[in-house]
Length: 415
Ligand SMILES: *[C@@H]1O[C@H](CO)[C@@H](O)[C@H](O)[C@H]1NC(C)=O
Ligand SMILES: *[C@@H]1O[C@H](CO)[C@@H](O)[C@H](O)[C@H]1NC(C)=O
Ligand SMILES: *[C@@H]1O[C@H](CO)[C@@H](O)[C@H](O)[C@H]1NC(C)=O
Ligand SMILES: *[C@@H]1O[C@H](CO)[C@@H](O)[C@H](O)[C@H]1NC(C)=O
Ligand SMILES: *[C@@H]1O[C@H](CO)[C@@H](O)[C@H](O)[C@H]1NC(C)=O
Ligand SMILES: *[C@@H]1O[C@H](CO)[C@@H](O)[C@H](O)[C@H]1NC(C)=O
Ligand SMILES: *[C@@H]1O[C@H](CO)[C@@H](O)[C@H](O)[C@H]1NC(C)=O
Ligand SMILES: *[C@@H]1O[C@H](CO)[C@@H](O)[C@H](O)[C@H]1NC(C)=O
Ligand SMILES: *[C@@H]1O[C@H](CO)[C@@H](O)[C@H](O)[C@H]1NC(C)=O
Ligand SMILES: *[C@@H]1O[C@H](CO)[C@@H](O)[C@H](O)[C@H]1NC(C)=O
Ligand SMILES: *[C@@H]1O[C@H](CO)[C@@H](O)[C@H](O)[C@H]1NC(C)=O
Ligand SMILES: *[C@@H]1O[C@H](CO)[C@@H](O)[C@H](O)[C@H]1NC(C)=O
Image (cartoon, rainbow, N blue to C red; front, side, top):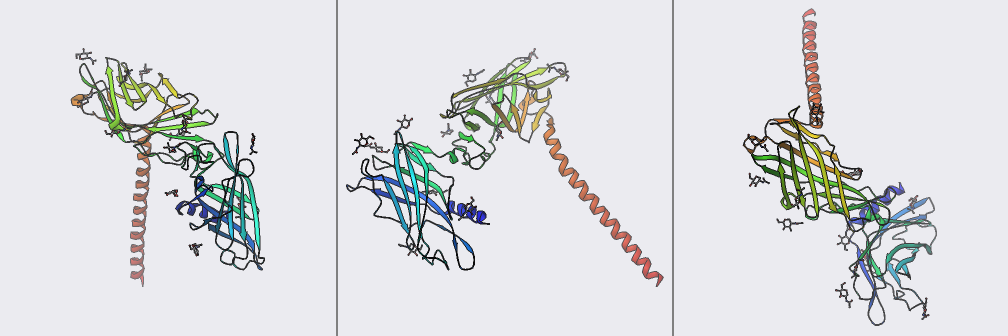
C-alpha cells in the first residue's frame, strides 16, 4: 500500500514542475545550481494508528541563509531549502579528487505542522539523514531524469528530474554531464530525427529500456544489366549489443531513416547486392540464387557502424554469410508484415519490418505474386480461428432458438 502510494507520488513527481535553486557566495558568484523534483513519504503516529503522508518539495521552497559556498577546507558547500511549517532539506556537498558528491542529505521535519502531519501524537522536530547519494565528476552537471529513492527511518525521499552542479567556477551549468546510472538504462524513446539511441543493460537498476518506434519503410532498388534486379521495401532497424568502457553492456538501437539512406548495389546472374548507408552505418544485403530450386534468398548480411562514445571499441563490424532468409521463387516476391529478426552475430541483429523483396527477375519493375512469410500466415490463422469459432457460436444459438421455438409451439398445441 505504502509502496503503491509512493510509486504514485514518484509518478506525480514527473508531472510536478521541478524547482530551481541557487547558492551564491558573498561576492554574488553562483556556486551551486539545483533544479529538482523531490517527493517525500513520511510515516508518523497519531493516537489511533500509523499514518503515511506524501508531499512534494513545494516550488516556493526558499534557499535558507545557512546555505553557503563553503570556505576552502574549513567548510563545505551546502544547499538548505526551507518549506512549509518549519521543514528543511539540506544537501551537504564535498569534493574528492576529480569528483564532487552530496555527502549527506538531511531532512528536518516538524511534526507540529498540522498541515502536513494532522493529528500527530507527538510534536517537535525530527531529523533523518543519509550519506552519499549523488556523485558526479568535477566540472560536469549531474543529470538524473529517473527517480532515485532514498530510504531513511520513517522517511523516504524520491528525487527525480535532477539537474545539479556544485563547485561551479563559471556561474553556469557545465556543458558536460554526469548521467546517473538510472538514466543510462535509458527510457527515452527514439525520435526519427535523432535515431541513435544508447541504452545500458543492467537488470538491477531502473526500468527496462522501452522499444523504439518501428522504423519507416524505405523503398530501395538496384538496376542491373537487364533492368531492375533488386526491389526491396522495408523498415530497417539495427540492434547492437556492445561492451562499454565501464564493462557494462550497452545497446545501440538504430532506425534507418529512408530519406537519409542512400542505396546502391549490383547484380550478376546468381548474386545481388543491396548496399544501404545511413549516416555512419552501412548494411549490405547479399542475395543469392538457388538455381536448382529456382529461388532467391538472403544469403548474407554485413553491418558496419560507429558505436556511441561509451563503447570500448567504437568501430563495429559484423558479417554472416551463411543465412537463408527472405526466400521466394524467382519471379515472385517475398512479403512479411511481421517483424523479422535477422541474426548476424551474437552482438548484432538486423530487424526488418513490413518487408517485401524481389530479386533477379522483376517484370515491369513491379513486385510479382506474393509469397507470404510463415509468421504472417500464423498471425492470419488467429483471426480465422476466432472468426470460425464465432460463426459456430452464432449457428449453435440459432439452432437452439429454432428448436426452442418449435418445442414451445408443440407445447401450446397439447394444451
Ligand atoms: C524536468 O525539469 C525541466 C526544467 O524544470 C522541465 O522543463 C521538464 O519538463 C521536467 N521534465 C519532467 C519529465 O518532469
Ligand atoms: C519506504 O520504502 C520502503 C520500501 O522501499 C517501504 O517499506 C517503507 O514503508 C517506506 N517508508 C515510507 C515512510 O514511506
Ligand atoms: C507556498 O505555496 C503554498 C501553496 O502552494 C502556500 O500555502 C504557502 O503559503 C506558500 N509559502 C510561501 C512561503 O510563499
Ligand atoms: C586545504 O587542503 C589542502 C590539501 O588537502 C592544503 O594543501 C591546503 O593548504 C589547505 N588549505 C587550507 C586553507 O587549509
Ligand atoms: C562559462 O560557461 C559557458 C557555457 O558553458 C561558456 O560558453 C563560457 O565560455 C564559460 N566562460 C568561462 C569564463 O569559462
Ligand atoms: C567535455 O568532455 C570532453 C570529453 O571528456 C572534453 O574533451 C571537453 O573538453 C569537455 N568540455 C568541457 C567544456 O569541459
Ligand atoms: C530505382 O528506381 C528509380 C525509378 O524507377 C530510378 O530512378 C533509380 O535510379 C533506381 N535506383 C537504382 C539504385 O537502381
Ligand atoms: C536487441 O538485442 C538484445 C540482445 O540480443 C535483445 O535482448 C533485445 O530484445 C533486442 N531488442 C530489439 C528491439 O530488437
Ligand atoms: C535527413 O534529411 C533531411 C532532408 O532531406 C535533412 O534536413 C536532415 O538533416 C537529414 N538528417 C540527417 C540526420 O542526415
Ligand atoms: C541479361 O539478359 C541476358 C539475355 O536474356 C542473359 O543472358 C543475361 O544472363 C542476363 N543478365 C543478368 C545479370 O540477368
Ligand atoms: C556501399 O556503398 C558505399 C557508398 O554508398 C561504398 O563506399 C561501398 O564501397 C559500397 N560497398 C559495397 C560492398 O558495394
Ligand atoms: C537449393 O534448394 C534445394 C531444394 O530446396 C536444396 O536442397 C539446396 O540445398 C539448395 N541449395 C542451396 C545452395 O541453398
